[in-house]
Length: 332
Figure 1 (cartoon, helix red, strand yellow):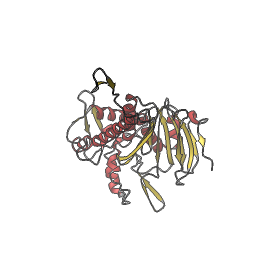
Figure 2: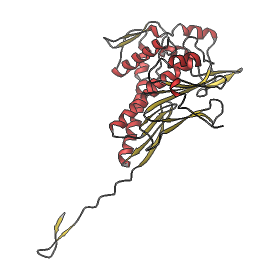
Figure 3: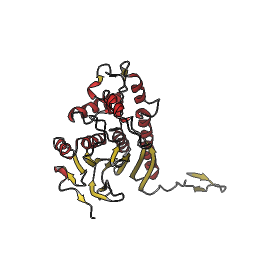
Figure 4: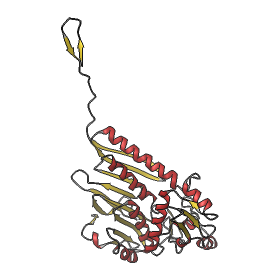
């Protein structure tokens, strides 16, 4: 910028000084959302833009929680559960697509994945060590069945065919939230990132020259791992019987429920799924857990771009054919 001096015919230049741009770096942030720890780690060429991208992810996670939480009375999910047994309930495009996807998983798994399991699931309180009586469980089982969910694609409504039914999207809500978060990051030009919500993660690109490394924890020895997976541009979800549970008389009651019995499956301790998207990886991790190692892995082999690692009840690790040469077992 040119300024006149006090001496006629003389001028001086005054250049506006700009603050130096913050150096490129890795940024990380974690918050408690959707009942779990949500974390974002990314590489940003500009720190301010990176922080703005992380803030956008957290805002989106909070939005999804407001829509899909079964605990918030104002959520769309809560409204569905209050009204759908009396009348068809109009759905937002987002909820319609998700419930439609849930029915797809139910059909492929012959009901091992079923969002109507919630009629039974809500009877358990793992913090207070509460489980339903045999009579209560039997009554609730009458309200479980994905075929009883009447989804009208033309009117975009959902109706429960039986009183007492309810649904829960916890089978894939966190994976879906991770998908939404990574979409936002890509739209902002982020090329290297990991977004996690509890046991569900999705990675964008690599870790600047080397793959992301994700460990599969030992389901019975805290602090130890059974395998390490090198990952790039993929989603990974782990479901385990060590997340929310209580033990009673030598039997573990955990949050993964078999819709057919209303009880916790006993055949495996953990299931890890790799998939192109987080919604699928989370849904299939819970499905394979219910089906068990043999049936679950047989199903995985029929699904394109899906792989699995299963730790069974004996502590033996099994992997799908696509991972047999890619899983790095942990060194004892």
